[in-house]
Length: 333
Image 1 (cartoon, helix red, strand yellow):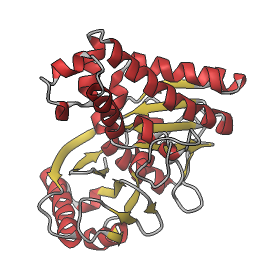
Image 2: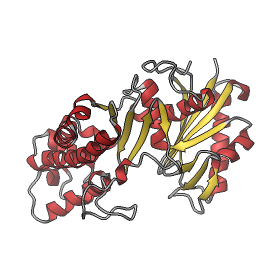
Image 3: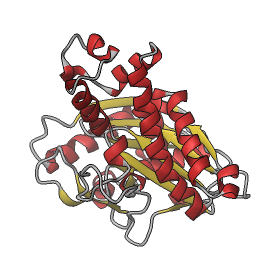
Image 4: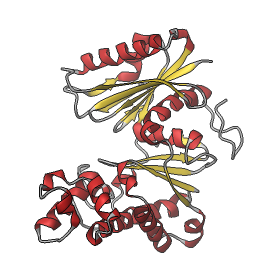
C-alpha cells in the first residue's frame, strides 16, 4: 500500500497525517506556527516534520505518492504559490509547492483549504455521491469549495468558491475583505460574537452573561450554543438570525448553480438543528421552487480531520486527474 501526506495549514497550527487511498489516517502530528521567525524557518519546519512523519511510520519516501496541502486564502495551483499567511512574517507570494517538491523529492500539490475539504467530503464524507456540490465552512471566516460536474471548480484565477464574500444587502457590516454586507460579516465567528456583546452591553438580558460570569471577553460561539441548549431565548434567536443570513446567500447559489448538495462544516455548524433549520427555511423561501426542492443541506462528516483528509485526497485527485468513474460512483481507486 502506498500513502499520501496531508498537510492542513491553520491560523496558529499546522497538522500533518499519512493517509491511505481510502482516507484512513496513519499517524498524525501537529505543531504551532508561532515561534518561526520567518517563512524560511517555517518551510524548514514543514519539511522536517513531513520527513519525521514518514520515517516514524517505518516508510520510505518512495512509498509516498505525494504531499497535499490545504492553505487559507487564494493559492496559485500551478506553482503551489500561497499568496499570504497572516501569522508568518514576510509571507508573500511564496511558491510553497515547488519549494517543497524540490526539498522532498515527492510530488506536492497545494490548494485552498476549503477546496481540499470539499474534495474530502465529496469522496469520503457527507457529499459522497454528489456531482454538483457546495461545501462551506463556518468558523473565523466563511469559506466555500465547489464541485461542479464532478470536478473541483477553481475559477479563472483559482479564486472561486468564496461564498463568505457574497454580498447579501445594499448596506451592512464592514467585512474584512474590504466590502460590506457579505455573508461572512453576519456569520463569521468574530462578527457573531461582536454583535452579541454589543447587544448585551445595550441591555439585552441573556443567560450568556451568567455563563461567562460577567466577563464578556469570554463570549464564544460555543457559549452562545450552550445558552441556546439551555433554552435562552436570545441565544436561540442569534442562531436563527445567523442561519437566515447564511440561507439567503445560499438561495442565490442554489438558483445560480442548481447544486444537489450543500455540505456545511466548521465550528459554527456545531450550533446544530436550530441553525440548520433556519438555513433550510431561508432557502425554501428565497430560492426558486425546483432547485430549492431538490437541494439537500447536510452537516459535514469528516469533522476535526476534514482538512487532513481533504489535503491527502487532493493528491489522489490530481494524480488521477479525473473525477468519478461514473456519475454517481465517487472513486479514486
